[in-house]
Image (cartoon, rainbow, N blue to C red; front, side, top):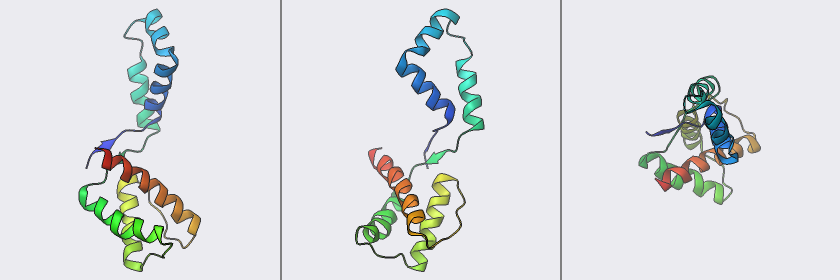
Amino acid sequence: MKSKNQGLGDKVAAITKATGIEKIVKTFFGDDCGCDERRDRLNKMFSRPVKMMDSAQRKFFEEEIMARYKKSQNLTRHVGDAFYKLYEELLSKKKQRTTCASCNKNMYIELLKIYESSCDE
């Protein structure tokens, strides 16, 4: 499974590059301004690697999860267990099983984003 680092350091680096701050800092302090080390330190402190879905996970998500959400159907116990397991594997987050519709929908949306990113590769 491929991982995509989405840590705070990567986000700060993207913002400083997009706003031109990175270029200004490098002009005054040179290429060795400490930005890379700071980015890595922030990533280690505030990141959770997000894994991409493999083909079997994408197939399960399409056929079992997406199909049921589109039809507003409840997940069976077996599919629900697999849904939570997939979420925990891909996002490295442990979730307590719940019947809360909005909680499960938020999990679905997070997995949908990963699914879409996985299909792009």
